[in-house]
Image (cartoon, rainbow, N blue to C red; front, side):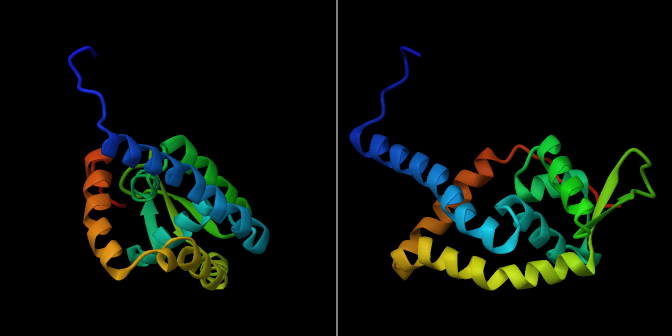
Amino acid sequence: MGDLAPLDAGEAAFWRSLIRVTTMLPRALEDQFLPETGLTVSDYGVLVALSEAPGHLLRISALAATTALSLSRISRVVDDLTRRGLVEKRRCAEDGRASNAVLTAAGLAKLEAAYPGHLARVRASVFDRLSAEDVRAAGPVLARLAAALDTTAPTDDC
């Protein structure tokens, strides 16, 4: 570690701000979201991913990659959503060891009901505090950072 240059003042300020945002934003969204909708932010992310997937179906491993959740975490979230009737788990026909998650009609209805409040919170917490130029500049930077951190390999769906 002795060979690494310390962060300069600008890098240190950026890093500290990034850590605060990545810690505080999910908590702030969840504090309102869970009591209003009965969904966690992770639940919502899973429902969104399934709603956007062909046939509302994704292999569990692909769902984990899409939502950036670990396999153990996605399994717990999907099991909970399944118990609540919002998602259905099905064995993968092509690979009996794998499972698919499928969005149910109740899950889609729950997602549609939660969307307006979620959108309002995202706008109030993030976009109302940024200019259009801020968003244009930050979007590619955040996408580049996310891509560099993404260690998941694409997985074929069943």
